Length: 364
Image (cartoon, rainbow, N blue to C red; front, side, top):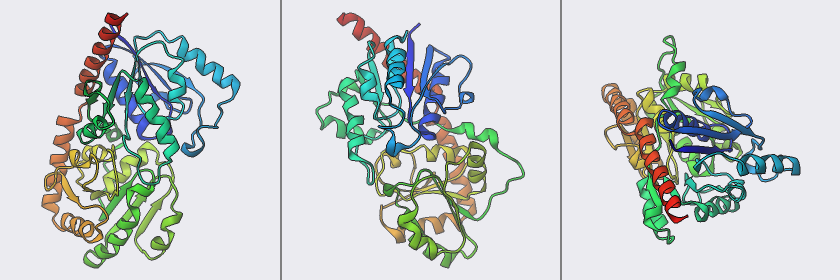
């Protein structure tokens, strides 16, 4: 049986959920270890998954310096140089990945979550992420949209595999029957410039003219200072500017009528899969791979980026038609079950691992 080690040492949140869901699905078929940051909650993983923890920095912006001292460097080198595994799969981007890759004797698979530099992202960090492409035998992208982009970078097509993001349906275990749906729009996730929060705040002014009791909840960590002027102009705003604990995530999605992704740019997102888990429709901009996650007029609406009027009208339309809104939520749930299954993702990943393993053995 093939042995695979998954590595994700980035910040808390979506990347941690991704490696846990993937590891648990893979563990039903192959032997799996994970190398994760020391603050990763072990309860996310099934008992069949062996967990190795290393010390890293929690802050994305300062991660190159955080705790990367000589003693920690030695421990990291020892862990990776002595791995008993056939394949090492880096499931998320991190500036340490490229350095760590030189400690590893086994072939590498790399999931590239962000093929392009997004607005507000540090180009130096993105550069370090892309160095991993040269080290990897296979590159996993989450959206078909970006295959052509990588081909234009002269990456051979046989090294590129598109395997979709899986469902984050585990949040449903925190569902509470006493939490009722409210007249509320939810913006969920880390605050970044590319996510278009300023356009949403402007659209919300238009929405309130049509739907008087509507509320907007902004939930996630990040810098809100660029948006303070717009925020001060608003009533009926709920701001939760911190990392949202899992039970609170479930509560927010239960309370919301619709989830909004007003992104200026995007690669992909795990937010729609959480929304669909709670049978909530999604209004998103048609950028990056979001059109592969949101079926326009079926599981939600797609609008042009930076179009405040279109964003407002799509949200108003969905909020004024409860019957269609609920139908969209049901279709989103069906889409999640059909297309975002971790079991199917694991099967595809195992084929990639076996292909790489056979190729490397043949070339020895």
